Every structure is written in C-alpha cells, then in structure tokens.
Amino acid sequence: MEIRWFKETDCVCVYKNRQVTEGRRYEGRVSLFTQELERGNVSLQLRDCTEHTSAVF
Image (tube, rainbow, N blue to C red; front, side, top):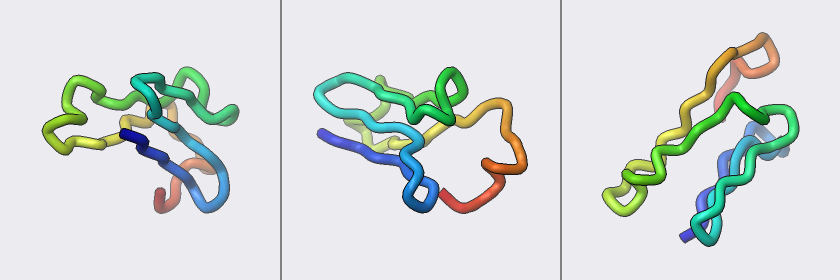
C-alpha cells in the first residue's frame, strides 16, 4: 500500500512499504494512523500549523 499526501506539489507525507516519510517542511509535525490504514482510515494529523499550512491538502 502506498499513500501520498501533498499540498500542491509539496510532499507532506508518504507511506510506503510500512515506512512513513515526512516532507522536509513538515518533519516532526505530521502523523498517520498506521494501525487504522487497513480499515480505510488514511487521515493525516498535522500539528503546529502555520500560515503556510493553512490550505487544502
């Protein structure tokens, strides 16, 4: 399974081969609920939002 979260062309988070990779601008601020993925929950949690992150993802 592969999941990719982007803000426009900026990579926010990628889940692939059971590994989570955070985008450079989002390191330490994003989380996936990996235990929920098989049930269809691909929610992204974003912490410490800034003006840059207030947009559609």
